[in-house]
Amino acid sequence: MRAFRRRVDYVLEIIRAELTPHHRRIRNTIRMATIGTVGAGVMAACHIQSVLGTYIIWTLVGSAGPMMGFGEAFAFTIAAGALMALSVPLAGILAETPWLLLPFLGGTITLMSYTVTTRRFGSPGLVLKVVVIDTFYNVVFYPHTFAETTASTFGGTALAFGILALFDTWIWPNPAEVMLLESLAISLEQTRARLASAAEAYLDPRGDRLSPNAPPLSDMAKHLDLLERCRKEGATPFRSAVLLATIYRAERLHNEVDRMVIIVREKVPRELRAMMRQQLTDAIAAIAAAIDELAREIPREIPIGPELPPLPVSARVKPAMDALDAATLAARPAYIVRCPADEVINYGAFNASLIRLADLIGRRLDHPQQSAADMKTKRWYELGTVDLSLLHYGIKVGLAIVIGYSVGVISHHENLSVILTTVIIAGLPTYGATLHKMILRLFGNIVGGGLALLAIIIVTPNFETLPVYMLTF
Image (cartoon, rainbow, N blue to C red; front, top):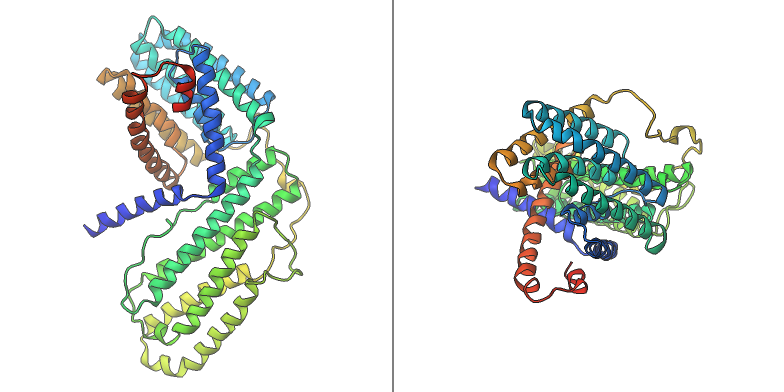
C-alpha cells in the first residue's frame, strides 16, 4: 500500500509540475490555442472531411520544433503528398494479403521512426508517420472510400503546414532561444524546490520521509531539442556554445540534488547532522537563494567569464560554506568518537554535494571556444553510422504499431486508430521520457474527454455556426 501511494504521489507531482502557472506557459498556451482555433476554423470552412485535419494542426503546434518557414512547410507538404500518394495503391494491394501487410507496416514505421529521430524532423516527422498509418488503417474499414479520405487528409495537412508557417513567420513568431531560457529558469526553480525539500527531510529530527515535491525528471533532452531549434533558427556557434554551457550547468545542479536525495533517504543515525544543524541550514539557504537568483537572471542575460564577480546573493555562499567547514572541523574530536561510521560517511557525502553545488553557482561560465568546426550540424540527407540504440527504438515502435493495428482490426472498431497515434506520439527513445509522456497523455485524455462530452451535450444541440465552433475549440 505504501509503494502504491508513492507511485500515486509521483504521478500527481508530475502533473502538478506540468500545470504550475508560469507566464511563459500561459503565453504559449494562448498562442497554441489561437493557432489551433484558426486552423480548425479554416479546415471547417474548407469542408475537410478528415478527423486528422485538426489533429495535425494541434500536433504541429503542441510539439517542440523550430519555427517553420514557408520553404520548409512546402517541403514537408510535398513529402506528405508523396507518401500518401504511394500509400494508397500499396494499401489497396496489401489489404488482400494481411500476412504481407503487417510486416510491411512494421518495417515502414521502423524505418520512418529511425529516420525522423536521427534527422530531427520533430513534429512534422510525426505527422508524416500519422498520415501513412491512417491510410493503411482506413483501407480495412473504408475499402471503397479510403482514397478520398486520404485526399481529404492531405488537404488538412497542407493547410496545417501553411497556417503554422504563416504564424511562425509573420503573425506570431516564437523564437526557440526565448523558450529555452524560460525553460532553464523553470528547471532551476524546480531544482531549488527539490533542494529545499531534501534539506528539510535531512534536518528533520523525526526522520520523516522525503516528500515527492518536484519529480526527479531531467529536462536536458527538452533543452537540447530547443538548442537544436536555436541553431536551425540562426544562432551563432558562439551563442550556441554559451547556451550549451548553461544547459550543462543546470543539469549538473539537477543531478547533484538527485544525489543528495539518495543520501537523505539512507537510514542512519542523526546525531551529527543535529550538531551541525544551524550551519547546514545557513549553507543550504544560501545555495537555494543563489539558485533562485540564477533562475531569475538567465532569461535576461547569461554573463560569461570567470573574471566577472558572482551574483550578489551567490557571494553569500562561500562564507556560509566556510562556516560549515569550520564548525565541522571543530566538532570532529567529539563526533569521531560518538557517531558510528555509516553516519559520518553519510554526513560527509551530503557535505560534499553541498560543496559541488556551491562551486557550480559560485562562479560565472567560462568563455567557450569560438571555433565553428565543432558546431556543424549534419544535413538531413547526409549519411552517417547506424545508431543501434535508435534502431532498436524504431523496431520497438514498429512492433507496437503492428500489435495496435491488429487489435483495432480484430476488434472491428475503427475508432481504435487512436492506439496507433498514441504509440507514435508517446513512444519516445527512452523509458523515462515515454513514461512521462504517457502519464501526461492519459491525464490529457481524461480532461479532454470530459470537455468533449460537455461540448457535445451543451454546444452541439444549440449552436451550428462556425464562430461558435471556433470559440468552443
